[in-house]
Length: 499
Image 1 (spheres, rainbow, N blue to C red):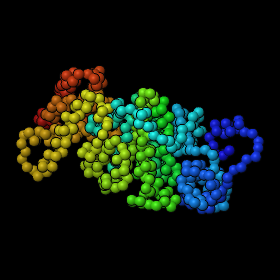
Image 2: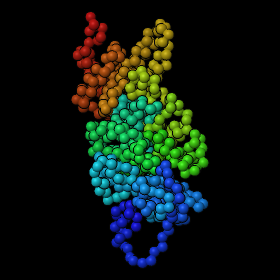
Image 3: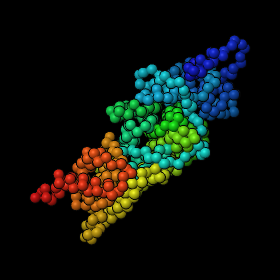
């Protein structure tokens, strides 16, 4: 029995062990380096089998040749060398799953990275498993609120959806993903954050943000930093999916953040080239699309017959110079149900979050959006898109008609409303409140600089209204008229204040 086998497998093996003659295959290491090991022998070994070396190292079989096999190292003692004996461990990769992993930092094999004992879990989940078939799935019908004004109104996400956050490095993708996780507090959603190939300082920053936001009570962090073996970085997103699937198949709602799949693709390309696989476009192996498709297809909304659980996947991807037509971005866009695009010009202009609504889309999230917000947001989005088209002409200093000037003024008000600082998620009732006020033209007499104070006022006053999303629009309109009047009495227009 392999010494690294799960404890329950070792106990089961001991309970049924009987002395007797046994025949086992044994191979030897012919080459090792850069996270790859080549082994001669072991003719019965198959893809995804775990290999155990005499020094305690472990590898995963990923390449089969006529007279040898190639594996990616998962654990290395540092003393692995050619000539060492190796044998098949007799089991495939699993990791502990269950409530005990909440608040923990784990590596992709289930080992503890937070200086605590390994999580005490009864069950273990396979890292790689088939996604739920079509007959076990249901329509995405319930919203997953992110707390962000732009996403929840114009790019809604449903529970069970696969949404892509894409843009250049440093534009706020990770910040928004963390805000989404923090918004799930008290929402009954279990979260898994997967950090792939990041610097240790970045992983520590993510952990600290989750701790400060009180999110560790319902979140598990799976990390394979840049210093870890490439094999662990390759397995990290599959480990995160396995942790979330445990809850999904028990009827619970889960959220998985993959940060990020561009790094994951680069790692897989490195391993594939070292395993002597033929390169394709941009030197990626031919199965890179299948790799990410089989990962993201595990996100689903299960039918009631299967418990009704959901797994929502937020996949992060990096572009270079805003180019969306490169290989990995186009693959991920075609696999997912929509994308949130982060634009560098918006970030440079101080418009945060730097989400370009003209290039962002949610293909199925609208079906899960509350009807009241969907109706109001549809009107607002048309005004905002019209403003983006008209604003170009204002650069020439031309004299504008009164109707055009009003549209541009309302667009600038809306742009200020849509700005949102990090770590400040908002409830959907607040979204509906400012949407109704804007669509009712209650803010037209104000200046863009007043919107931050107005939103702060709504944050304090709207919860006291005790209005639900399903309340009639007339009630919301009357309430917002009264609230706006109270705000105006407290804060006179800028022209009166200056006089």
